[in-house]
Image (cartoon, rainbow, N blue to C red; front, top):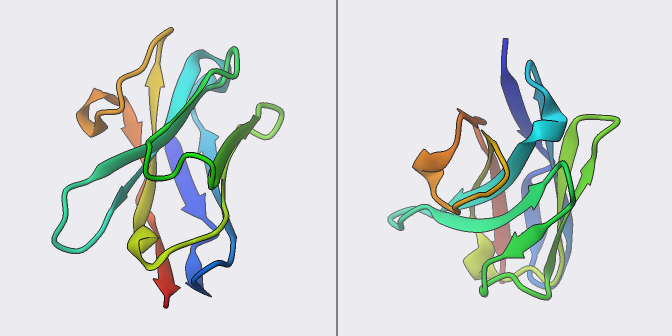
Length: 124
């Protein structure tokens, strides 16, 4: 059974940090891109970052560049999203998703598998 399980969300104050985890199982992790997406109430889902588990290529949305860092621990089949200097506008449900292949589109529907999400709330 394929699973993507997010964890690490919570309530923090502006300027603080959180680390999200996306634990994958049921597929060959090294062959996949893992992407992070977020959706705030009343807003469209936004692609935040992605990483290639095979070669470490990364991408960041302009809104998080310089504040968020994505990394992959292939031995643990887990991708992390280190979020620093958090802002109230980062408040959202954060989801990870996975797509097999050698390229990636930051598009929710492009993925093969999706997680259930973890809530991040940043207070001002």
